[in-house]
Length: 227
Image 1: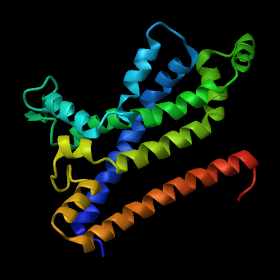
Image 2: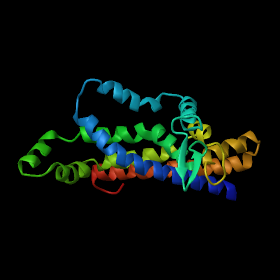
Image 3: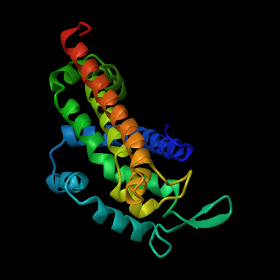
Image 4: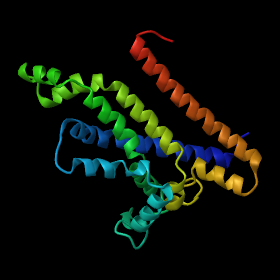
């Protein structure tokens, strides 16, 4: 059986993944729409910076986040309930790091979905008197639903699998920053392979189920029948 401490770590991971993905879907929707429908000078550089977490080693990103969120960094101190504390080694710090690290995994599917929408449909709706927000919610969102599903699943799955970044900026504070990947690493480091196997098995099943649900839903959308 999975230990209580590991269940707690799993819950922290799930909470982190859900919070991060929800924020990214809100933030990336207007950003992805702008990137998909505009061509401006310097846009390629901006897109390269946004996609940097795809190729940058997590430990490098985690190191700079630790410097930025630590006590001596520009974002190191905030006031929470009248108490000044560092964002490093806190759940809030984990969320900030996860937002940066998982951003391209949510942004890219949305951008691709928006880019596939024909401009002619939007133009016709505009001629008919539909306002920009009406066009977006009545035409764009329904057609981009597969992009949203992919973005949500990839965002959650990628955040659940984070290790280098969360270890750097979160450490291993039980109930706050000790996520499942860190708990698994600690089991292996201590030679506790029995608990490592159990926790790894839960993470493996969760990952397979999420991807299975995504592919099954996408296939249903494409063929119109339940596989």
